[in-house]
Length: 308
Image 1: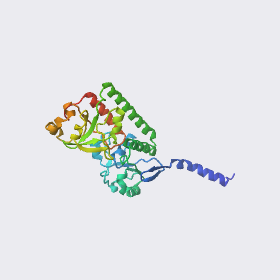
Image 2: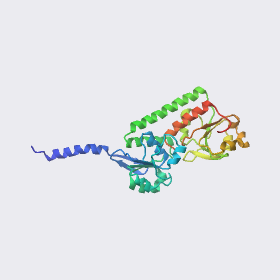
Image 3: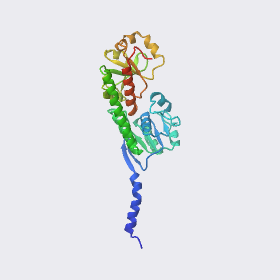
Image 4: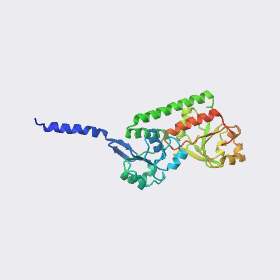
């Protein structure tokens, strides 16, 4: 029995359905990105992207500035076997190409190299930090989109749900301990007189808001969410607590202990200096959870008159 031409066409289309069904397109800051299957070999050119992939259970084949990730970000942990592709501001295109990625994740800081990156592999461009952006919302968008691209959206949603649950739990701990009253100044020390202080438009504000804490620094920072200022600015908020975020400048504890200016500060006199482990302020969603837990632990344990 012969088969009609129409039946042959229908049969061919049916065979194509599974293939066509795998093709998806996403709009992003660099245009449009189309993938016909979930990428497996992914290169991340900033730490927010690196963190997001690790949260999804994906080990990138290459990252930028791998050594710095271990110092400043720490969690989620980056396996040692991942290849380093250079710095975050100037990655090696040759090193990236050698890894034969099927997806590159970057931000608009790499705009001059975007066309070259596209020649290597499909490139997803998203900037968590740019003028007018809400960092946590953009980081959340990045995680969910990468979850869609890699067929792991369910895992992305579980990660976000876990962060929300953790924030609620830490807020309850702080409220039960009665330590939510005074504002907190979140700082990284640059030296014994100057700090990077985190502003209301930064990533860490999400942690403060969800913990029921007030930011002692109310001025809007740069688009990275911080200001550089002298410690005297903190003296203008005498009823605040200083949260020193690691890593600290070598020798800082001794320098501060011998500084008349430092010992004059109200938080120092009130023994309200709190030191917390590193949490990357320019990352994705995970630093919000990391900071929240560390901050709750520190405030409940009590402060001191100096850093350690």
